[in-house]
Image (cartoon, rainbow, N blue to C red; front, side, top):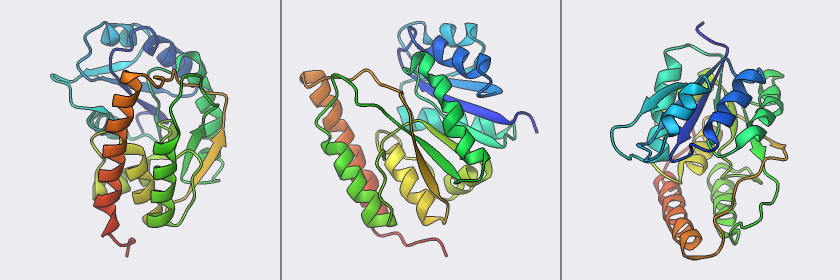
Length: 232
């Protein structure tokens, strides 16, 4: 086994925070290896991640979060880890809280543990979360409080099984699509409250544009799964 815990960190223009994320995971003993997939950033994200100790992959063009995560999973698979983490690049030092999330999987509580977030200032309207909750409940029979959280700890063998059969969504539908595929495959999810926070985009033009893309991606992920049955 190349490593026990491998963290996949998709990143786009996060030079100010990605180094802190990597350091928190490595120095805090949360992960043995951190793979940062830089989605063709225009700043020094790759350099900051590498300086902090990450293994860095740089996409030759901008391909989206889902593609970056999929690339990271492929790199992680070659290391044969027991556990895989998904961690966003903008968390800063609070990435160390992934230790408590991972602990739930190590203790056998569930095959996947998802970090719950504190309410962030500058956040949105909550409608996207509501739609995602409804979709997961309708299509997989489970209510999740944090269906869009990008911070996840998983058994590697379960992740590779699900990704191998269903793939990963390309964009903002990644989390909700993975949750539905995961639950339909017979695997379990537990949510773990944390003090993690994201910097919100607010309710201005940038925030509204982001949520419009998010809604479209969530809708596409739900629509693609509406006709699928549960695992045989």
